[in-house]
Every structure is written in C-alpha cells, then in structure tokens.
Length: 108
Image (cartoon, rainbow, N blue to C red; front, side, top):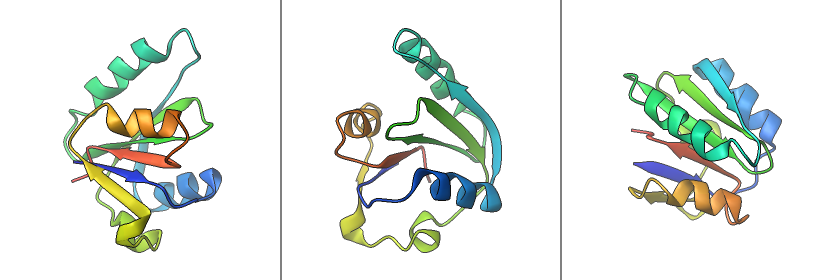
C-alpha cells in the first residue's frame, strides 16, 4: 500500500517530523540522469522489514525510514488529503506531475 498526499505540507517540516518518529536509514540523491537507477536501488532497500519510503515534490531525493508511524495522525490528514494505491508507479508519477506533495511508499 502506498499513500499519496495531496495536502500541502512544508517539505522541511514533513522530513523533520518523520525523523522525530522514525529512524532515517538513508537518503538517495539523484539527478535527471541517475533517477531511474537510484529509484531501483531505493525500491530494493524497501525490502527491509518495517521500512517505508518518502518521495517529495521538488526534492531530488528518496528517503528510506524504519519504524512505525501514524501518518494521518501526526500530519492531521483527512480522507480528502490523500489517496491510497497499490500501483508502485503512481506515487512517483503523481509527485512528478505536481498533483501530489509527497508519497509514502510501502506504508503498512
């Protein structure tokens, strides 16, 4: 399950809040040339138990976290603030085209 957040949240606040609740294992920095290869590496790392990923608009990084967090509660999300999908490509596409602020990958 992946959660696509459409509610605007300041990227710095989003990242720092998650760091308070979970362990940041790694960030994967990419550019236009390396994005696809870095994305593959990022997705492979999501196989770590209890991990989830974060991808934000206008930030050329994928973030890998470990831990359990109630995203809806800490960011005060309502059902109109996000979309749930099982399609692994949709969270990335929605952020890339500007229809989402952030996506959580493999959030259980």
